Length: 112
Image 1 (cartoon, one colour):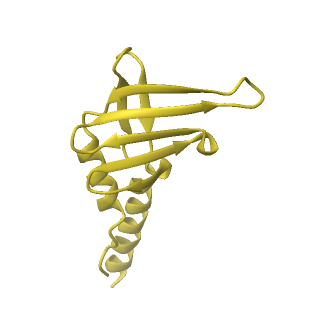
Image 2 (tube, one colour):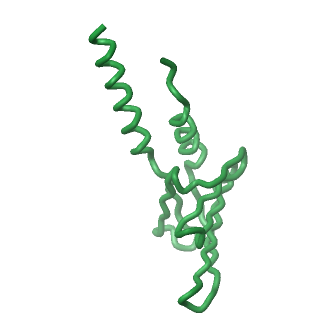
Image 3 (tube, helix red, strand yellow):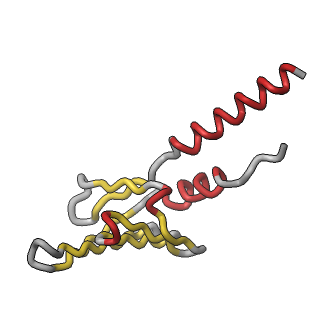
């Protein structure tokens, strides 16, 4: 019985650490491939079978990733206190399907 409690405690500890350290989605820009963006599970505000949408900086930056092609479009609104303007960047996220699968699997509860 004592070993069952220890095993349960270890599994619970491992699963909480694993969720905190999920691999981020790494994408690179088309025009400047040396520039990379990292997206984390907490930044994803929507996903479907074809798209994932990420938001950063209180909604000033929105990124849409096509899960079938790995193509990225990132829109940034730079406003107050600066002169308002938009910046649109394009890129690729080569492992988007695999990373999102891991994120979704990490949310599946364990049976007791």
